[in-house]
Image: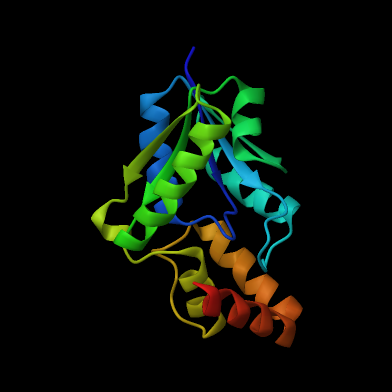
Amino acid sequence: MSTAVFPGTFDPITNGHIDIAQRAAALFDHLVVAVYAHPIKTLLFTPDERLKLAQEVFKDWPNVTVETYDGLTVDMARKKGAKAIIRGLRVVGDFEFEFQMALMNRTLAPEVESVCLLTTKEYYFLSSSIVKEVAKLNGNISELVPPHVVTALDEKIRELGEEAEDRIKIITMRD
């Protein structure tokens, strides 16, 4: 049985992430959507909230599981017996970062391949950061994320008030 790991912060999960997961799930017997719990960046949602949002998306996908992890992605891949780490590529800038990451992962775990899938053209522009910025400014994100994510973003932004605005500002400045 071939297994792949699709890691990310998924803050929040977008239709672009789902597109990559759908295509990866068709290539492998089992896909683990791996929500990175504690990255070195500012996030809007907690690890548990991000996990639940992703689990809702994939709840009816028979060969997809969702879980959180900490540490190196290659260690997660080894733990799951994965043959590959799935990454999505949107723009040229993604390629440079993913190329470096793939080379490091190959150094750490030569038995695990990096598989990059090109984003579908409808999602070239899409990132979690952009979704959060548009949501903060009351823009329509209904075609960019699943309905339950629209609701979760609205609730989180209202709950955090100015703190949400500060977090989103920090996030978008980094991207």
